[in-house]
Amino acid sequence: LQFGTNDNTQMTILGNGDVGIGTVSPQNKLNVVGDGNFTGNLTIGDDIFMSEDGIIGISASTERIVFDGTGGDISLLGANVGIGTIIPSFILDVFGSMRTTDTYVFSDGSTQAIASTPPGFSWKIGSALFSKSFDVNSEDGLPQDVFFRPDGKKMYVLGSQADEVNEYDLSIPWNVSNSSFLQVLDITTEEIAPGGIYFRPDGKKMYVLGGEHDEINEYNLSTNWDISTALPHQVFDITTEETAPQGIFFKPDGTKFYVIGGQNTEINEYDLSSPWNIVSASFNQLINIVDQDALPTGIFFRPNGEKMYITGTLNDDVYEYDLGFIILGKVGIGTNNPRQLLDLSGGGLKITGTNDAPTSANATYIDQFLGIFRLFSHGKDISTKGEFQFIISNIDRSEVIEALFIQNDGNIGFGTTSPDGKLSIQNVG
Image 1 (tube, rainbow, N blue to C red):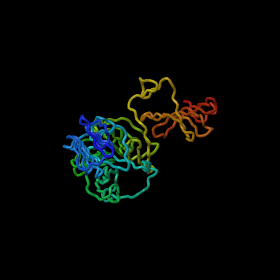
Image 2 (tube, rainbow, N blue to C red):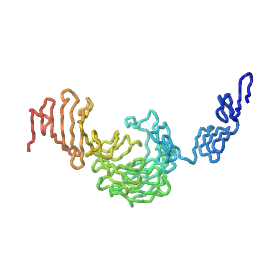
Image 3 (tube, helix red, strand yellow):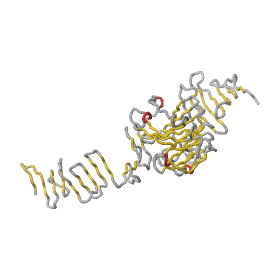
Image 4 (spheres, one colour):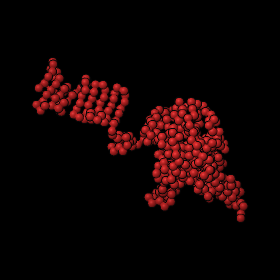
């Protein structure tokens, strides 16, 4: 059965019941070819529905997935959503990298807040310009550290004059000049020389680093971000690694924290087997930063871990570090059975530096007890290109031994960088 005008078939009904609109050979119960306009609500069984006000849903009875075209909103209710995975384990489970532009997404109090970096901005301290300041002297004359809530609406200042945490409200997020003092928490019972403060991203836990007992104090907050509800929970001692701790920072997932110390001028890294539970922490490794500043005070990481920032009072500077990657365990190159942390088999090792650097290529071994062992070659200009040197020094480099020096003319020096013969030995014992 066909319907049409002027030999132009508009609708076809086949003997098997298939209906075609815009086609004379429908393959389904309803086969539409061409554009269409639908007015009113359409429901297909109990699973799919469309309304004339722009709502499209799957499972009409529960509205588990709703696309609201009128307001530009998309709601997915009652189910996990996976991007890059067909087995999502969370409300939003993204397998792979995610990029957002000029957007801030905050959690409901149970997960880490995510912040993006808009185009044209960076984490380069060289591009920083002073904006404004806020005086906290009325609350504490010796402020040691500051922490902001992820949405920028609250600021917490740790002071060592009164040994307290001061909480401020910001009427304009992230604008410190609009801060107003709200309340204070006395921590004298736990620490009389506080140096660093950090909050879990949901505001349910607070951590205070103390220099009097060289420990980290963990507090539970019954009301998120309200320090008046904070109660001491447990303590983790760091005396073995540092006796003058200055600053603390946690990895966003709570599986690592970092303590910067002034006694050994180093950053100590700890692993937490139970995220955010400081008593589950174990020391992992350290890095010495005496070459940059002998009096470090603060530490901060870019959320993706690619950059680290250190403040120091010796030079009153902020230092920016680029971080590579860390492999825990043994690494084999040319072998699948490495016996050392780095095991090279079947070849040599080539280190290439830049031609304009005073020391173009080097390899350094640092031991906190034995000192620094450095092997490098010179390559700044033609007169030194090809020179080779091995030095030994203590950690702060106040004592340096020129152990071996090979000039580009073939002269070799032990204990001297100016060998005047094929073999020159200085300070023979």
